[in-house]
Length: 133
Image 1 (cartoon, one colour):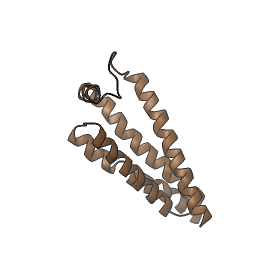
Image 2: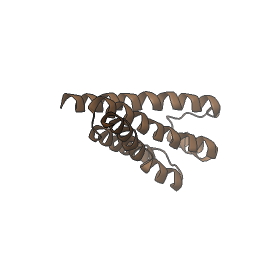
Image 3: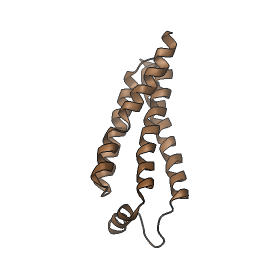
Image 4: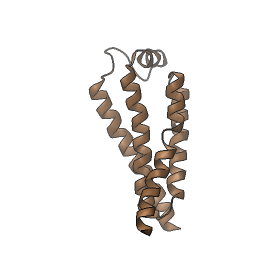
């Protein structure tokens, strides 16, 4: 039981760190427009509307990467897929919260809702399968 809880916690931390790093890289590639405050709701709408499609795809890729990293880490520690599924579901919930807070296009909302859970499961499956082989 301790392995499963620890795996879930480590998986969540890995996901959080990966998202932070990925977003920082994205901000270096696509800096925010001068004079707009992402904490201001109206400015946030402008930022989301003017963001290049590649930058939006980068966001979805970051969610998928976070899911995969969480799955690999939690699966390796827990020796089970369940903590990865829980962390992937948590990431999905957080992406839905993000969709509510930021006015993204429909396609980004759909991809964001499914971007974390399948990679999290895949990551856990890869490491748990490798252990049984």
